[in-house]
Amino acid sequence: MRLAAPKILFAAAIGRLTEDNMNQTQETLAQDVADAYIAFWNETDAQKRRELFAQSWTNDAAYLDPLMNGEGQEPIVALVEGVHAQFPGHRFSRVGKVEQVGHCLRFSWHLAPEGQNALVGGTDFCIVSPDGRLQSVTGFLDFAPGLPASGLPASGLPASGLPA
Image (cartoon, rainbow, N blue to C red; front, side, top):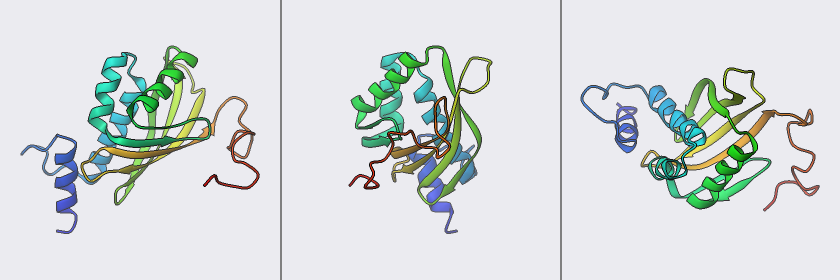
């Protein structure tokens, strides 16, 4: 029964606990969190995007990838708006399965114009808070135009290594 309590907590935390889905697997719940994250990135209406943030991220959430970072709702929402401005008409899609270890998730995604091949792809690592919302996301670019073979942009990390 060790897994039953986290499963119920996780389902309740994302607001979907009913008699019909109490038997939902951890894998399905992890997919729901990842899919809510992708929906947040795809939302083009600014007000709806803020509502999605409030539903699926903690107030003090943090986002970090090799090109941008932000902490809290407005900075993270602004990052997404910047991506929409840079890639109008493009959509994110989750690729493959979502993996979960405890309160951590890992999944991959693609960004592509509607009906076309992916232009950018990456893998995100997420920490999910006890209430089922995203607490932090660390993203890695797997491929993108101009991305060197190392996977990090040339301006990625300082010579001294990871920033403190």
